[in-house]
Amino acid sequence: MNLPNKLTLLRILLVPFYIFFLLMPGIPHHYLFAFIIFAAASYTDHLDGKIARKHNLITDFGKFADPLADKIMILAALGCFVQLGLTNAIVLIVIISREFMVTALRLVASGSGKVVAANNWGKAKTISQIVAVLVVMLLQYLLELGNMGIIKFGDISAVSSIFSIVGECFLWISALLTIISGIIYIVQNFEFIKNAK
Image (tube, rainbow, N blue to C red; front, side, top):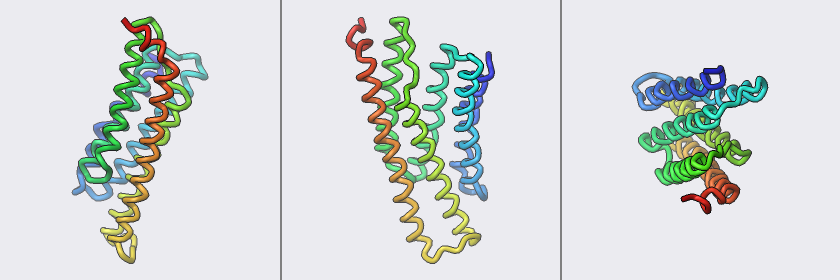
């Protein structure tokens, strides 16, 4: 297994660790730990692709595993956000639906001996989701610091409401890009659906 594929697997292996910290509010600075681990996992997404392209290490395994690792990473975080009341379940449902749709398309294409690789819209979607998750965790960490008295907020409930709106805006923007990229995938690869047996 080459280095890019190992980095992709590392991204999946990091998921349980940031889930643990996200869902353990009794641990001081738990949002910070979750943020750092998620950021590290996200960086492997950039790194594995860069190394694969630079050293011509692109494999069919990587083409399938890399987007799968992204899905696991993002959906796990959003699932935790729903449980913690940090986002609406609709955002998660929209993103899961798109991911199932594109995965089904890839499977149909695979049956025809073709590999549907990520395009620029898919990459923009992934980046927007990563940014949204990081923003939500960062804002929650700032609130945690406020509740600990480390940062002084005038009216912490008002700040909490503002942070919630900002986080939701980032998540809905990523959901919108998710829908757009899904539609583009379908349009660009409709031949596989049309010719499926």
